[in-house]
Image (cartoon, rainbow, N blue to C red; front, side, top):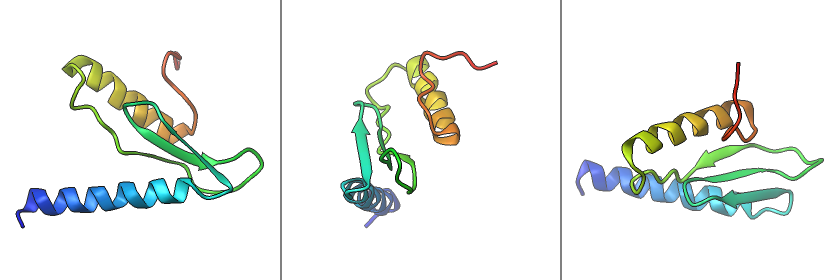
Length: 86
């Protein structure tokens, strides 16, 4: 196996694990076509994660904007698209 193949296998395994974790009864998951998220349901405790980020199909400028939004969302734990932060 080449290094890129190993990296892809690891990434695929992580996506599988996080999707499985998001199916737990106290969790909810969302896939917006660009990335997936998991988070605890209202009133529950658990981890939040942004994963399976798919930017290959986006134009370069839009990909950068989405990457920044994804990073902000993962840090603050809320949707940041369309919001202005000062």
